[in-house]
View 1 (cartoon, one colour):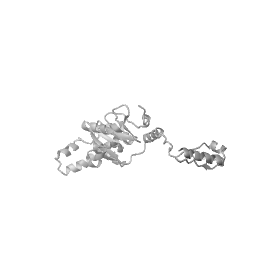
View 2 (cartoon, rainbow, N blue to C red):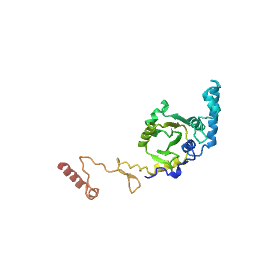
View 3 (cartoon, rainbow, N blue to C red):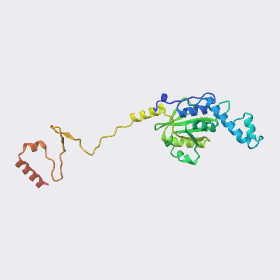
View 4 (cartoon, one colour):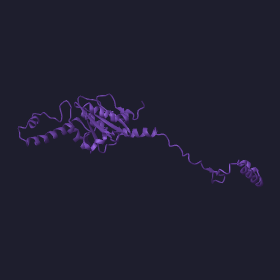
Length: 249
């Protein structure tokens, strides 16, 4: 299949350890926007906020004790990061991570091609669906390269993974510019057929003096007569011919 966007133009991070959450964000942003340390810092900040909240319910609160013991639900040493971490990370760039079940984005499941990006999660694995120009790609760090997804398949694909247990999130906001978008636009321009010329009017003709000649006007009562023939006939002959033609109708 012809590539709608050259794969070399798409920023893509393959899997390293269990850092799929990190790869998911950077593939969505289309550059190395975050490092592992960035996300760990966000996770630790969230843990501190949660400790303060749980402590209000008493120091014997099991959730508080788990956090004190270092059992964070926001990240693990293997590289997993929670949806809260990804949400806070994207907020830095003015982007919102919205669960697909949220009423605000319910229509996106019916017309997902109108969005720009989705983030999907199942069993601690994160990956991205991203649109470049008018073309969608699956950016899954567990796979060897980006995979093109057609508009007609996109809605079905999202519904299938939701039924498989995936959590789907819509990412809305002002995305940073990327070269894959530029490549998609160039592809669209190259493959858009030219607009055909109007068939409603005959082309204008230029007279020897440089003016525009009006096309001859014919009526149903006066069939066209050869211009060359008319030029060789006298006025009387032309009149006689016209009378004869009218009688023959």
